[in-house]
Amino acid sequence: MNLLSLMQARRGLSSALCAFVLACLGLPQSAHAHDPGLSTASIQLQRERIKIVLALSLDDVERLTRIDEDRDGSVSRAEFTRGQARLDALAAKEFSLALDHRRVMPTRVQSRFTDQNGVEIELGVVGRAVSTLSVTSRLVSRLGPGLHQLVTLSRENGLPIAERLLDAHHNFVTIDIRPPADAQAPTPKTTGFADFLVLGVEHILTGYDHLLFIFALLVVTSRLSNAIQIITCFTIAHSLTLAVATFSVVQIPSRVAEPLIAASIVYVGIENLVRGDDPKGRWLLTFAFGLIHGFGFASVLRELGVGANGAGIAMPLLSFNLGVELGQVIVAALALPVIWKLRTHRGFVARWVPACSMAVALLGGYWFVQRVWF
Image 1: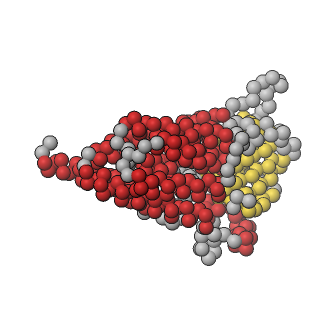
Image 2: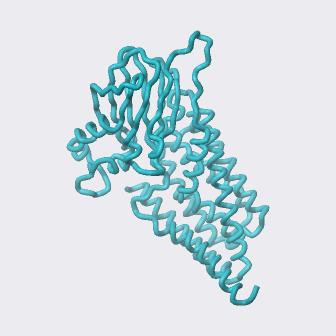
Image 3: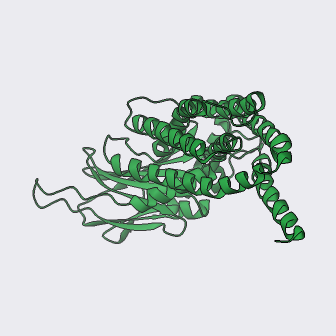
């Protein structure tokens, strides 16, 4: 390789790394690290009616219909009340059921605020004995690509029938709801292993706070053994808390977990500046903060309604966690060669590593302030 080619390659590697940091710093103020666009639709078959509860975030509601009238970034109860009828009409129109392929209209629609600062829309439909139930959610289509809606179907006693994950391109599903021929017949299995796997990959790739935390750990790492140790500890730690939170053994509210995740980013960035290059004992720090990040991952499954009735937890938990690990491995495999190539130059270690660490700490501080006070 001639001198000109070598200089171009170095500039290309430097640009790739800087682009990652600048992309994080250039995120819009309204971006949320755990806002992958998840909503749920819980359908319960009762004796003479069908109860539907749609759960949406306020951000999703704003995408569907303008409620934040003064556009100050928050929705007051007065604003919600004024837009409530419009939201109810939209839900009744865009979320529809068909019993044996005949559409039925809701006889009752009622939206309300939830304690989690979201919105629930309850629809009531007159039910009857049928063989199939079809769901069409044009709501998820209106929300746009990359957003998902988990449809859960259960009987009146809470016994699950099926779970389906819809998106903008696949917003229709037909489910066989005929009861088993005898009491010993197995409950219909839920599907969607691949869907939750993809959702896990998407979450880590769009979870900028998790990516920035990993980047801050790896940018001061010069040996493969240390990188493997860090990634392994992070994986084990967040897998543990993801499991215990999903099974409701231990839970931390998102309003607590999210600022703690931001604080972990600030801490690692500052530690890079104080302790210098390739600090020792990073595995213990990674494990401790990985436990906190696991509660952040668990919030995604809670928003999807996984484990709400104590059933159907194992498959979504396993496949989502595998997706997170797969995404994490992809990111590390792409980032580490670039980082190690750049680290062969003294100027990068002396100037760019501290600059990147400072940028990490500042962005983590921004997220912390945003999540605590806004």
